[in-house]
Image (tube, rainbow, N blue to C red; front, side, top):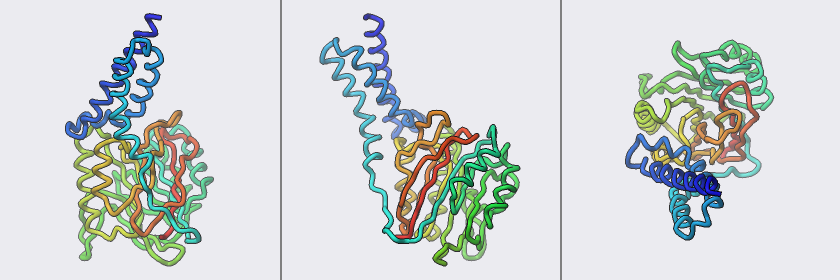
Length: 305
């Protein structure tokens, strides 16, 4: 009995401390990485409560106090409005997947991508064991991008790619902004749109904050109405950094709502995301079965609004 009670104390106390430290990440950026695990901290508190509830109201109060930061960050994401598509409009199926540099079965991963029957594929970490599979995907998709040395990204499309690059360009053709692979695609309704993919560093790296700021500044210079941005952002919706990015990328809307993609075995961290401009509405978003990567692929179906 004492062991169970002590375990309850540990779960509640540890969960409360970690949750409040994670909430402080809005003001102390190094702590924001803890926010990714807020649902885990909430579960720890709830598991500890039955073990320690006999200790009276103070333990219940402590548990409720620890659940406050969890609710403040997680609930808004679960009830967040996502722009929905009208019925009857042409649809675009976008698959995004970090195929992992150490993919342990790249051929199976490539087959899983094809089996999902996407119209557009955005891939990250293609510079590892998956690289030989790029040629295989080109046999099934009529159009694909080229990427310079050092680039770990790829885009494939059923429809013609009329332009692409690793950097955005102004009207004079001058490149600007951080590296982001993009493709201008002539859609099935003959209305062109742009797809981009990117891969952020880990949230504990200062480089991620710099990259997020640079991406937002670069995208503000282009037409974001028909834009789609997908990739491994190494951010969860409960992080203050993700909330800041959502505001900075407006009018793009994040179409992936609390959709976990990592780790492969039991995904509980929603770190892969897809944003779309106001020309698009969401039809459906789903996590696909595991591949040889450490991420799960996501399939997001959009339609013109």
